[in-house]
Amino acid sequence: MTHPSELLADFAAGTLPDDRAGRVARHVAECPGCATELTAWRRVADAVGDRVAAVAVPSPGLLAGVLARLAPARAAAPGVPRYAAPLGGAAARRAVRILAAQRRLVDRRVWLVAAVVLAVGTAVAGWAPPGTSEQVLAVVVPLVAALGVAGACGGGADPAGELVAASPTGVRAVLLARLTLVLGAILGAASVASLGLAWSDAGAPLVLFAAWLGPMALLSAVSFALSVLWRPAVGIAVAMVLWVLRVLAGSSALDGAVDRLVEPLWRTSGPLLLVAALLTTGTVVLLPYLPAGLGRRAYGR
Figure 1 (tube, rainbow, N blue to C red):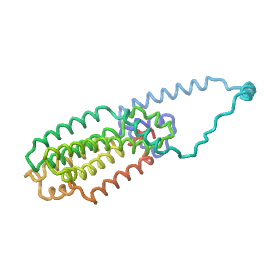
Figure 2: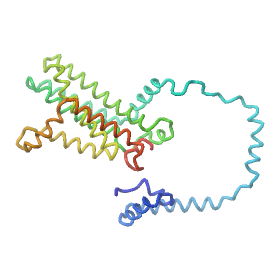
Figure 3: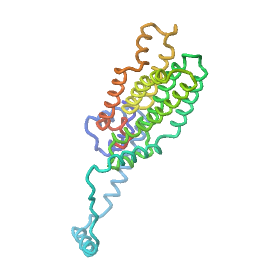
Figure 4: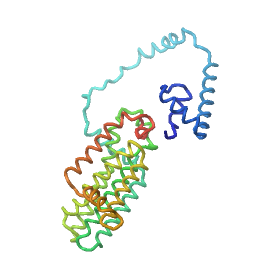
């Protein structure tokens, strides 16, 4: 198993289920780093236990006395306002606010890398020989989408993870908002780039769009699933492998069977878009049921 750092506090407190506690114990016995961390958590547990034991048990009448002193103030206080709006109202406004909030939580480096790579790719496509601009976009846009999705949606340290955990906003809503924001921004930028290239006679608009839309959907879905369900490094690695295979397709470096396997993945088609949609939907559905320590820790659950 990977280093169970997030489980060591519960293990030291004795609150882990037996099966998980057994796995942690076996790992700690073989891992000096985790054993040192567990020792620190046990010192914390002992210190807390000592302080709790030193606190005198309150008298049975303490609560009754506090309530009696609060009774006059509670009687004089105005009534508590009641929420009178219909439940589930203003759903569209709430969705927009959740979406807008994600903009401040996505690492700025995600936007910077996406902008730079897409700008360079568009420039190369503009200078490419006639009929090859769509091939450049088909290589650049899916890579930008995969890296952006992994960086924004992958499991890891979320700067607002504790706030998300304490809010009524569901983990799926947060994840979908972040995915929508990143993919929407990249999709919009790629569309503008395609229209600009079409305006400069670098290719037909539909041909340029079709060159990158399907590959972008598939590569970003693969990166999204692996980054959320496992970790961003895995999502990026698998996406990069697929991308390198596409770049090398048709060359002597790859076997013909590999070429025949990769080529359909870089075409915009109904089955390809369906696979990407199912992969994304399945990831969102599974997220709340993941064990602690997997991708869900990034969203406070």
